[in-house]
Image (cartoon, rainbow, N blue to C red; front, side):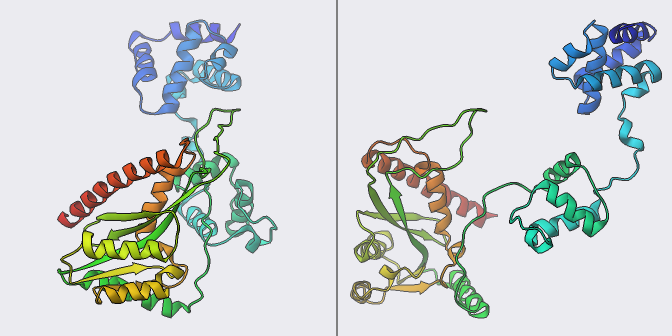
Length: 356
């Protein structure tokens, strides 16, 4: 007797309320596994074979036979999850804690493997040595997803040449400056960003078996922005230039002092150690401003402590990465539009944070 015939014979022996319960669970049950098993039973009752059901995506052929055999032998209770009597899970809280420590604080090389990056198979082997528990690839994949451990690109960095205590003292001093500056003074984070007509290439969603293409102009063209982010209000201002030199930074200094914050008694600028920030021409411009503008330098190679860096990263993600602009004029129009929207969003977020 074929599998769907055996299920149909047993189905006829069920009462009407029992049949109704299976149909309801196939439609409305929040347990995806139970809902799927009920659908398999109903599909068998409708006369579909195991191969046809597998092609519908309800499960593999072996799973269809397994559900059918248990349904005929055990009845409605067989539709419940059969793994509930397997005992305690192997990947318990202690196992997960060790997994977090291994992924977050080490590489395979520290555990005797020559490979520099983790794979699920390597994690299983290392965790087995450390915990004595071996789990399957399926379980490891589920645990990684549960712990929100993702496969992503690392960020390249350059180590700060300063000693750790000196670097921490400078960062703490800048944080105190932001918190204690008087109301008639302003603190901004400043930095420059390059805009290339040659698009930055980055990840994007694609159909399986295809690869998107990004048409490049061939001959690159560049523009440069110098931006300032108000640490108190979130206001974003910027200037543009064709070259990244002292003139760009001096133009920004004059805009901050005369147009953006003309009534501020003092403007404090937190910035990195790029050479245009400490050139002789910059020093002359600061002197001409009568001490109204003061520069506060971050430790070398500490971009994460410059808040405007996040704005530049988002600018690349939203505008310049994989862009299709055919001219610098078109690209800069997109850049300006994004920065105006970003300025409004930042000021709105800062007001909401202060209100909270």
